[in-house]
Image (tube, rainbow, N blue to C red; front, side, top):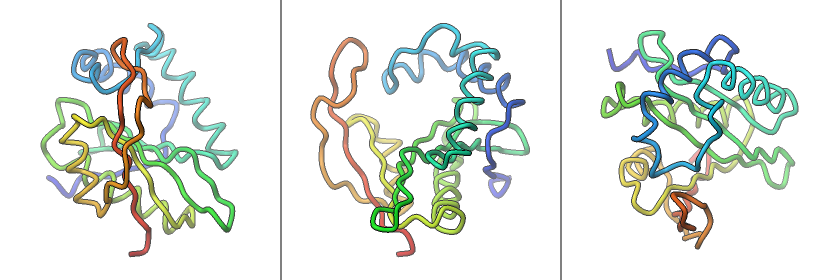
Length: 175
C-alpha cells in the first residue's frame, strides 16, 4: 500500500477533495499556516486557486502537484518561486498531507517524487524549503529527503497574531 503514493499536476477536479480536507483539518493546520479567507475552504474557492496555480505553472513560476494514495487526493506538494535562469535554477518546496493520511510516509514520498520532477522535468539545481521552528514532523520529512538546515529567517511569517521565525532548508539536486 505504501508504494501507492504518487504525485501529479493539480487539476480543476481536485478542488472538491482539497476543500473537504482543508475544512476537516482547519484546526490541525492552524498553527503552521496563515489565516485564509472563507472561500479558501470551499470547492469554488479552491477551483479559483487551482486556476491561478495552473496559470503560474504555464508561466513557469510554479509546479503545483497533488499527492495521491490509492488514487485519492490526500494532499499537495508544490514547487514555488521557480527561478529557471541558468545561474539560479532553484525552487522552493511546500507540502501538506491530510490528517487522515498522516504518519504513513506519504509526505516523505511526495517530497522525494517532487525532487525528481525538479531535477528531471524542471532542470533545477537547488531545492529550498522552510518550516516553523516547532514543526518537527515537517523537518523530519525534509531531513529524510536530504535537506539540511542552513539558517533562521527571523520574524518571517505572520501566524496566529504573531510574527514567527522559520527554519530554512536546502538541498543541492543531483547529489
